[in-house]
Length: 115
Image 1 (spheres, rainbow, N blue to C red):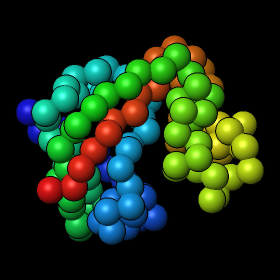
Image 2: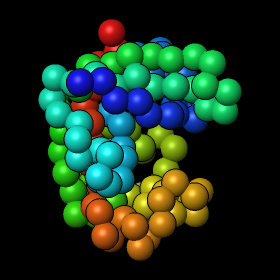
Image 3: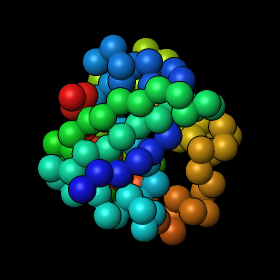
């Protein structure tokens, strides 16, 4: 099954270059439909004028962003953030997800590979 998701330009370019190996999302109803072996077609925001198709290699579900980011902090975040708490705060302050919806749904990490 193929799923569509949108990415901000910075993350899209990391995916395009092969640097991005994981996608972090709220584990809402839409994301719960994604299974290992599915594909995700990422569209670049804001114009949705570029796309990249990835294969879903793995799925990990977490109760909260802290545990989620802690697992991959050294690999995905240490170059940009001083600590795990800063990544969590950025998730809320940048308008990605609210604390309330995060507590309700938890989060999910998709291990992905660009086709």
